[in-house]
Length: 136
Image (tube, rainbow, N blue to C red; front, side):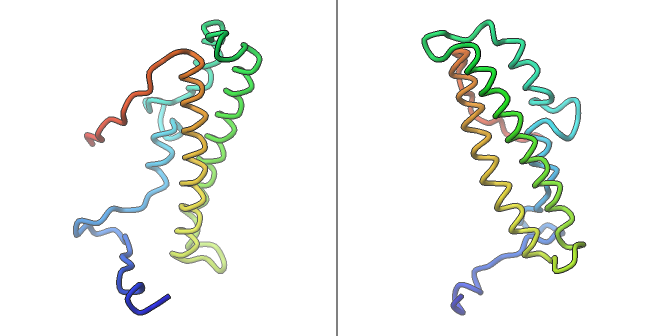
């Protein structure tokens, strides 16, 4: 890494100053793993109950159920990676870099989860809504 690149790195260590705070709870909240009031809490159960509503021209019901299972597995994996990232500094050979690595892996799996969720919505002929602004 060049000197210029190293000067451009900004750590997000709590305390504000206009920087974000890296928190795995944000990932878990958006995927419904933090609280029963989260928008996607147990979304896979609702998706399975909606299997009879699948548009047959998009996919059959068995493929839809497989897709929902893939979504659930990816969402579980995302939650686990996010949780693991919160312990990165406490582990031997851990540190802020370990946390960053886990959060990068988490981001990749979140994007894969999003693709699966969009496929589920497409199979049900539901519109993909734009993300809402966090009002908290």
